[in-house]
Length: 100
Image (spheres, rainbow, N blue to C red):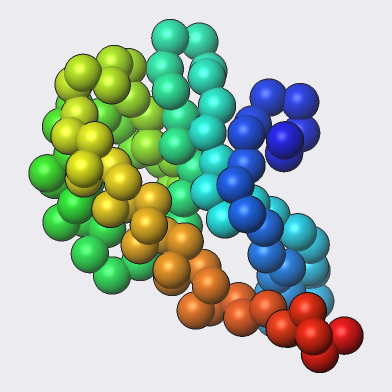
């Protein structure tokens, strides 16, 4: 869980140039009112192309809001999450557990 209402999968440590750092989920899911919210990385290559193929949804910076799963292409949703995770892992490489 990421907080009280977000189901997170995987984790990574981030550090911004400002010095702010923390832990976050690689991908997250939550129900907000009548919508499913998928949390993913913003701006990764191919994101806009995949979103155009997804079906009925709306977006925020890191959120994709879906009212009904029947309104979206689940294979495209899977590809979005997979590419988001890959992009996050590329941008924030984690030390190997054996290096610690």
